[in-house]
Length: 208
Ligand SMILES: Cc1cc2nc3c(=O)[nH]c(=O)nc-3n(C[C@H](O)[C@H](O)[C@H](O)COP(=O)(O)O)c2cc1C
Image 1 (spheres, rainbow, N blue to C red):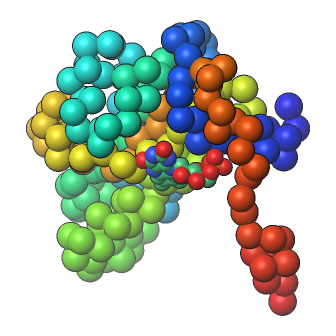
Image 2: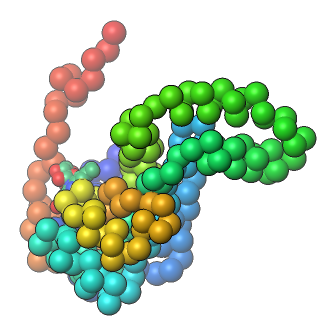
Image 3: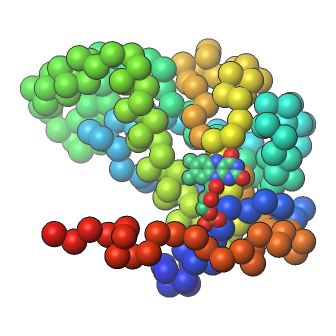
């Protein structure tokens, strides 16, 4: 499907059918998230993939009444790292050196530069920075799913403390940030017929 056709086809699904996505499709969507760019390549987040009906039931009380987290095929939980420190940054650049077969220490100077830039931020600023990064991965998953004709609903409407407790995310030094329900739209979901509402192109795009 062409990209604009896919983006016009997709919408934030209100109601999912009980169709399950194939593991191949889910793997592609996970890859779309994993391949997302992030500042300095630091990937300050992880993706949790929930398909277990029992786990969805446990999360449901924290979904602000949005039963689609239970009814979807797979629920992606984008969770940002809570510990972005010198070690986190050093580990990343050690991985870059290893993967690119560079000499150990080849990136020491750049690593130092990144540490100075990142670690001058307050913990709140680091949290916001990580949240910005993870939304790029969410966007890629939304676009990839539209291209695969997989239905999706991005969601910020959930209680992240409840999700974190159920999933034991604090122990993993993670915090749930945004989630995405994936599956197939129910034939009864009339919001599929709603006209897409976006700013007119001339208001939206300021060409200079
Ligand atoms: C970060 C983010 C959070 C959202 N949270 C919710 C949500 O909690 N529940 C919901 O039904 N839709 C949610 N949406 C969907 C938006 O309401 C929807 O994308 C927007 O109204 C545009 O409509 P469309 O996606 O159908 O074109 C969210 C979208 C984004 C990008």
